Length: 187
Length: 283
Image (cartoon, rainbow over all chains, first blue to last red; front, side):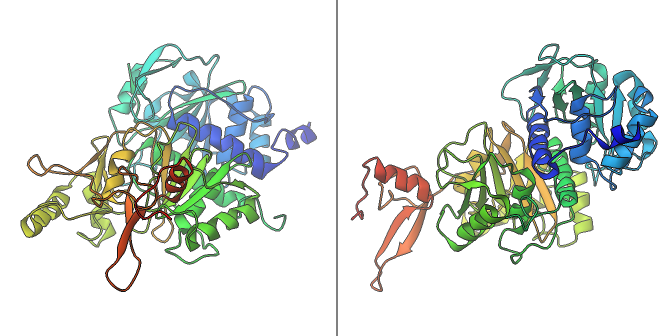
C-alpha cells in the first residue's frame, strides 16, 4: 500500500516534465486542441493526464484544492510525496482538481485582482470524455474557430465576461488534455 | 552536461516560470511577475529570454538564437553554446528548421509556423515606464485601461517631428485590452506580431516579468487616423542578396563615407545568396 504511493511519478523528472509542460502550454496557447501527455500513474480515480499536470506544475509553493471524489487518502498521499503541494480549500487555492460537478460553484475560487489578474485559480477538470466537438471557441490562439466538448457553456461565458479576471481551465481525460483560458469566447 | 540539471535551472524554478507562462498565455499582453533567478550572464544579456527558453525546452527541440537578426554575434553564440552544454539540445541557424528561437530585437524575415516558439529578450517590459516611473501607478493604469498618456507621447512626436518618430519598441495593443512593449524590435517587425502562427513568449530577467502572445492573437500598433502606423525600413535593397522586403542594417565600410545596407537577418540573406540572388555589393 505505502510503496504504491511512491510509484507513478516521472522516472526522469526533468525531461518528462519538460515534455509534459510543452503539451500543457500548447493546449493553453491553442484552445480546442487535444494533447497527449507523457506517462504518469497516479492512484485511481485520478487520470494519468491530471497526474502529469500535477507533477509538472505543482509543488510546495502552490496551494491545491481536491474536490469531491478526488479527495481520497491515496491521492492525498501520492500528491504529498510527489509534489508536496499544501492542500487547502477552494478560496485559497492556486490549482483545483476534480470533476466538473465536484468543483462547483465557480464563485468559490479566486479570479485575480484587476492589478494582478494572474493571481487566479487554474482548475484541472476531470472529464468522462474529451473530443473536438460541442461548444464553438473563438479568441486568441484560435485561427478561426475551434470546438471542444465542454461540460456546459454558460459558466465559461460568465467566466469570459470577467476578462481580464477569471479562471483558467485544463480538461483531462485518460492520457489526453485540453485547455480553456479565460480569453476564449465560448458559444 | 551531467554536471547541470537539464537546461541549467532547477525543477522548482522551471515550474514557477512555467506557471507564469501559462498565466501569460491566458491573459495576452499582461505582464506576469516571476521570481527571476541569477543567471551565469549579466543582466541585459538576455537573462529573461534564457530563463523562458530553459523552461520550454525539450530534448527534441532545434534551438536557434539571433541577436539583431544575426546568428553569429557574441550574444547569440554564447547563449547557443550555453544550451548546447547545459541541455544537450540540437542547435541550428536555419529559421525553418528551428522549433525554439530566442531572439534579441528582431523577428525573423521568414514566416514562422505553428510548430515554433519565439522567445524575446526584453530589457524594459513596461511600455509606460518612461512616462510614469512608479510601478504602483503603471499597474493601476493597466488595470484601468488608462492609456491616454501613451497617445500623448505619440502626439508629442508628431508635434515635434511631423511624424511618429518612435522607430523601435513601438507600443502595441493586444486584443483591444493591454498596451504592450514588443521589446526593442524595429517597428518594421510590428505587423509580424499579429496573427502569427507561432507562440510568442517575452522574458524580462532584471525586471522580473513574463508576458506572452498566443498564436493568431490580434496585435495593433498604436496610431492616429491622420497619422497611421507605417512599418518603415531603410529605402535600399540588400547589398549582398538584393532583397527589397527585408529589414536592413547600415554598415560603414571605409573612412570616406562609404556604406552599404545588408539584411539584418543573416539566415535569410545567406539562404537567398545560396539561391543565386545577388546584390550590388556582392563579391
